[in-house]
Length: 60
Image 1 (cartoon, rainbow, N blue to C red):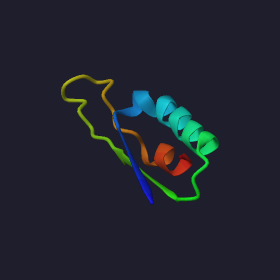
Image 2 (cartoon, rainbow, N blue to C red; image 1 turned 45 degrees about the vertical axis):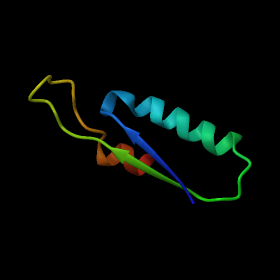
Image 3 (cartoon, one colour; image 1 turned 30 degrees about the vertical axis):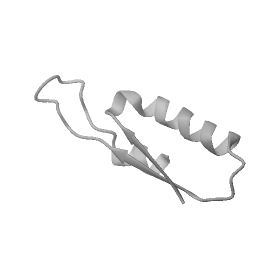
């Protein structure tokens, strides 16, 4: 199993999606992948720092 960790807020969702598609499309391994997403709500610092939503996570 290959474990891959992404971390960031909602603004990196498009990058996570692109990266996951690239890994899955270009990898010739037969091993399964397990993707993890670490995210957090830090809107107290800046209002735009919202976490990756559950809806986005399910989509991925």
